[in-house]
Image (cartoon, rainbow, N blue to C red; front, side):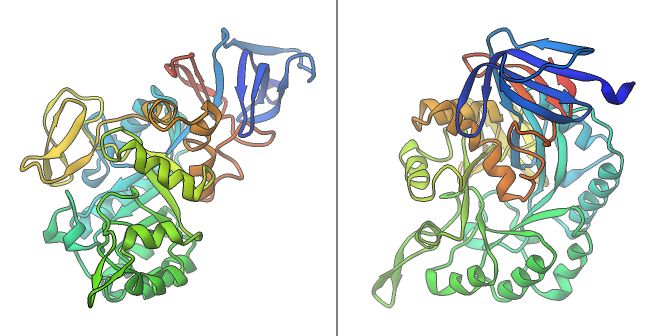
Length: 394
């Protein structure tokens, strides 16, 4: 009988990638969506549990593909509770799946994170937002654009250094590298062969140094505009830096930290104007102090000051990730960038799902996809979060 149990969400406005369906209905069976449409136009089965959305929005669950930690948990300093803590925290803010991010750290710490992720993903317990895999942000990044990353762990991409990480291609979803580094092109090819997304970030290159790595398979850019070079002179001639190269190349998608601090609204509008909402996603780049009081907090081995809604290095030379949540990114997309609600939601759900290659099962309210759903009110305040058909926050 259990396989016949249905859950119906009704009495709200359903957000699909293209439109808002007033008085919409989403029908779920077990972990999957089996029907989406307007009330009265689709058949509602009997023997159902009903969730009354009370005139709120019924949205696809939000997806954060760049997050370092939350509520004290830190992917770079992992323990057995890290992913459970993060997943439960994110569910409060409408996130139904995420990619855990390690910053530049000792290789042993990164391997440990990959090992914990592999073990955690074998146990498919639904107790919060779903971990999709690991994003390695570094160590193969530029010393000039390292930001809050500890310089002592930076490395050149040599096979003898990176081959240990490639053994975890089942859980390593994404790697951020500086494409201009010696050996980067070879690493890009090795990652691409294993289906791992290669992202340009923390990079100081110019076009001539970037193009080979992009040809080899760099298809994404980490926190666009942050820690990347812009145009400068090469033997007097003004040439494209990383920003212009990545803006120009249609093969490369972009991620924007949507906290309202890292990137000004004009720059966010520029990236979206050039790339479009299908090729730019919001991320939080949240560090472990998100959800905790102001004070001194750590991300990996780095100490950061958290106050007034930002996380920064003690010497004030760089941000140290953010302390924002994905619902804030959606609101900022509407209020600061001037996006339509459906487009800001799309940049926080379907677009990131496409970028990391899980849009066959995540990112939109469509028949056959995972029942990952966020119900929020007119102010984008989360009322309920459903992960794979189960209420994970209310």
